[in-house]
Length: 109
Image (cartoon, rainbow, N blue to C red):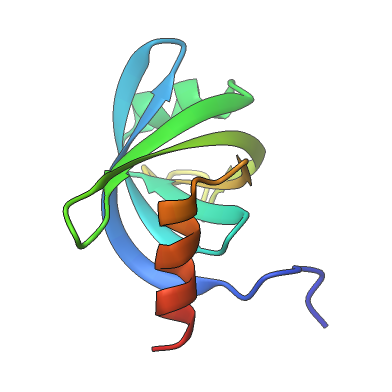
């Protein structure tokens, strides 16, 4: 049984993670109203992002609207020790209404 409160919705959305004023490319792999799974395809970026607790995740909704999510890293890791892909699970702090609406629409598709 899953300990998640919200169903995860698979997506593939390009994004930027901003941590300590530096931006890194990322891909959002799944979302829920209060949680998000991110992949960072660059070893240097992954190492930096792993050492930070708070970050801003910026991306565009299919409507073209920009969304900024303020997140707290909950976990991070690699699939294999020599992987260049870092996986990050983050809690979304106070998600904006447009993001919540996006999640609700996707959960009914």
